[in-house]
Every structure is written in structure tokens, then in C-alpha cells.
Amino acid sequence: MRNRLFILLTAAALLAITGRVGAQSVIVPTVQTGFLIGPVGGINLVAYTSDAFPILNSEPSCFQAQNGSDIAPWGGLSFEYPLGNAQELQNFIVAEVLYDSKSSKFTSLNGASVTTPTKKNGVVADGTVNTALDANLSYLDLFVGYKYNFTPGPSPVGPGIQVGPTVGIKMSAKFDKTVTVQASSGNAGSPVATSTVTQTVDVAGYSLDANGVSTASGSANALRIAIRAAATYDIPFSQEWIGTPIVGYDFPITKVEATRAWGASSVFGGIAFRYFIRG
Image 1 (cartoon, rainbow, N blue to C red):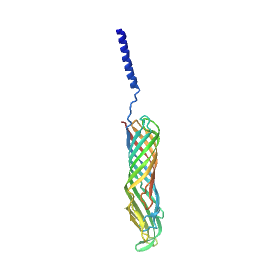
Image 2 (cartoon, helix red, strand yellow; image 1 turned 90 degrees about the vertical axis):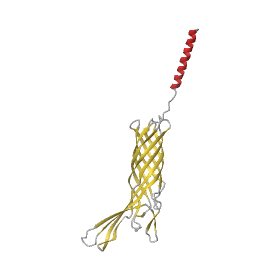
Image 3 (cartoon, rainbow, N blue to C red; image 1 turned 120 degrees about the horizontal axis):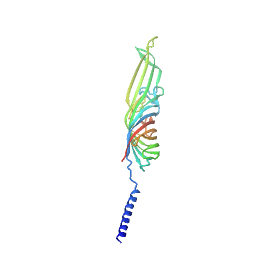
Image 4 (tube, one colour; image 1 turned 60 degrees about the vertical axis):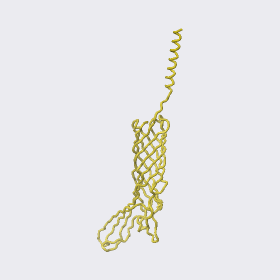
């Protein structure tokens, strides 16, 4: 009788222990995904759209500019927060603080005059006047967007897309106006003298007075709002470091300056290097 009771108690204990082990084996541990952070940067292929407007206030009809294009840098700090299953990361919130240059050269419509009367040593003769207009334009941008990767994984990997709004605070908005004059005294064999002057002024709105002279008024918009969309490709160099080439388009919603109907957009390319801090 005692032996039977001992066997029953031993069997009950073994069943209890087995049940506990089995229950523990089906528990899936929770993995904290953490976040990724690191530098990002590249270049903008900047494009300006604008109405025609005077380069020189004193010559509103002779020298005008419209539209333009150039190359400018961008860069800053990128933060990426994964969402969902920690073993199949595909959805992310991306936040970036960026220095974003939209500096460019305007296109001169009639930026040169070859029959402008000039004077040298008291002698008036036809000379050449060339004008050029560059914009030094930059913003401190805050971008917040959604990113989707087509390939799941425990770390970001493969192709993806991201899109979101940016709000830019104006850092610099200036015009560089350059005038180059070539002239001679008009006498036979007289050498041609060249003079180049560049003036830097704040970007302002403009209007024409009764005499057709351009006068400045107002200033460039303090904020720039845009939509930033891009294709990405995450490349894990290790479990912690992820490199992400990026190509996209920055579409402006607001104007740089209203009286010129001046908008600044860009096709951009670059790369981010983010470190995965796992929670």
C-alpha cells in the first residue's frame, strides 16, 4: 500500500513538472525593437520656377531673370523607429532634422546688352553689359514621414518607399547680383576695360513705380512647406549598422517669394548611415 502511494505521488509530481516545462516552452519572448539613428546627406538638383522679373531695380525691362537650376547640398540627422513584429520589420516612422540648401542660379532672359552707351575718359561709346543673378537660399527642415520596406527582416533590409511633409525655417535668403561692363574709349586701338561688381542683398518682394523703376517691398517667406517622397534601399553592414541609399523628389507647396511666383523644388540623392539601438 505504501509503495503504491509513493508511486502515485511520484507520478503526480512528474506530471506537474512536465506541465510547467511544456507551458514555458510555448511562451514567445517579447523582443524590443529599439530605434535607428545616424547621419544622412547628399545633393539637391535644384530647379526654380518663376515669373520674369528685373535683375536690376534701375533697369526693369533691360535685364530680367526667370527660372533656373543648379546643384546644392543637404544633410543632417536621421531617426527611424520600427513598428510591428520585431522579426519582420517593414513599417517605420522616419524623422529628420536637415540643413537643406536650395541655392541656385537664375536664367537670364536678356541679361546682356551689347549696345549700351558707356563712358571712358569722357568718351561715350557702345559697350557690353552682362548681368547674372544667383540666390543663396537655405532652410532648417523638419521631416516626419512613413517608410515601408518590401522585404521583412529582423533589421531593415531591401527596397522601400517613404513619404511625408517637411517644414523648413528660412536660414538664408539673399540675391547675388553681378554686373560686368566691358567698354573702350571708342578710339581706334583703344584697349577694352572690364569691370565686374557683385552686390549681395536680402531677397524681397518688388513692385514697379510710375516710372517703371523696381522697388523692394516685403521679404521672402519665413517658412517653406513641401512634400518629400523617396525610394530607399536598406543595406545591413552588420546587425547594428544599416546603410540606406536614397533618391527622391521634394515638391514645394509654398512659394519662396510671392511677387515673383518663385518656387524651389529638387530631385535629391544621398545616403544615410544609421545605428540600430535595440531595446
